[in-house]
Image (cartoon, rainbow, N blue to C red):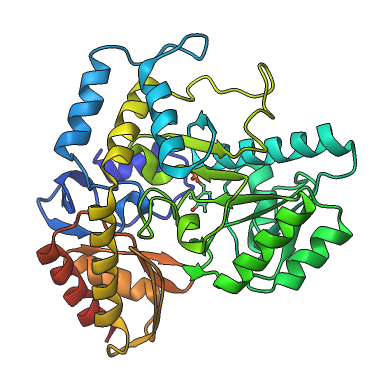
Amino acid sequence: MGITSLDNTFVASTYGRFPIELDHGKGAKLIDTNGKEYIDMGTGIAVNVFGVCDDEWTAAVKAQLNKLAHTSNLYYTEPCAKLAEILCEKTGMKKVFFSNSGAEANECAIKTARRYSFKKYGEGRSTIVTLKQSFHGRTVTTLAATGQDSFHTEFGPFTEGFVYAEANNASSVIDLAKSNNACAVMMELVQGEGGVMRLDQAFVTAVAEYCNKNDVLLIIDEVQTGNGRTGSLYAFEQFGIKPDIVSTAKGLGGGLPIGATMFGEKTKDVLTPGSHGSTFGGNPVCCAGAYNIISRIDSKLLADVKAKSEYIFKELNGAKGVKSVSGMGLMIGIETEKDAKEVVAACQEKGVLVLTAKTKVRLLPPLNITVQELEKAVNVIKECVK
Ligand SMILES: *Cc1c(COP(=O)(O)O)cnc(C)c1O
């Protein structure tokens, strides 16, 4: 049997895969089993920060593989400690818990917020306000945190203690936080899966101020927006806020699975020995790869991300067939006149891989995509949307 039939027969049918069997690649270039080349404007959903097979990242991962691949969290290892240090140094956060995915990073954030509040205020202060159109993961609890009804059928009962406020409506968040005696507000600063919707600065400022004044923890989900994607290491930096907890994953490992939950001053010692854990969390190989990624997201790269972002906005805003362009940095949503799925298929045909988010076409290219590749991809997209 070929790859496609094997997969369709033996892999659980949770994904609507495209009719493409990817085989190998370099940077933003991917090659399928027929030898067809594609420019990758999706990076495995914001994961491959420096594209695939990046030389430096591959070398860092290989070096660690040749030393030690796994130890359990009963012992200390250098990559885990060094990654936590560089994350704290670069973000101002104080401590980090490592897991293996975005959903787990959010689970840890939720557990931490509830424990913080329980220890300080006792029972009955455990609700978390999240936003409508949010996405926080696929576990039963992170689905409960996700403010989209379509995720809340058939898998119930869900974890209690989540209420959903209107994005960009501060009084909606504040009213729900008050009436539910909330312990935390959790949100993405650019709602990725919800349609690449950037939150308004005034809304974010107002929510952050309310949280700060009322000892309601502010949890920012940077699973998709993090790791250089929006033009700063983490998007919260550009909103001028100081979250109590930041979760991230996707791009952090540069292609290997790792999640991180970062704690600020208030939350850094909430989790104590035995209160939380993960067998693979802090895996040395994943941490060595992640350290390489985080150490290379510097001001030069971030300026480049912003320049590339401006180029994409300029080219697509007002282009024929484009209704609007949204997002931040290299996380971009395009509202098209044509059906987004049709645009995706047409782009694939012409050798460009793009994604969708709700009814939009979504772009998440490698941060180091070359100008030539980017221009080529944007021209194909313009051709396919008109
Ligand atoms: C992808 C995503 C998640 C879930 O991450 P997984 O690694 O798939 O568990 C959570 N939050 C946001 C904002 C995401 O984009």
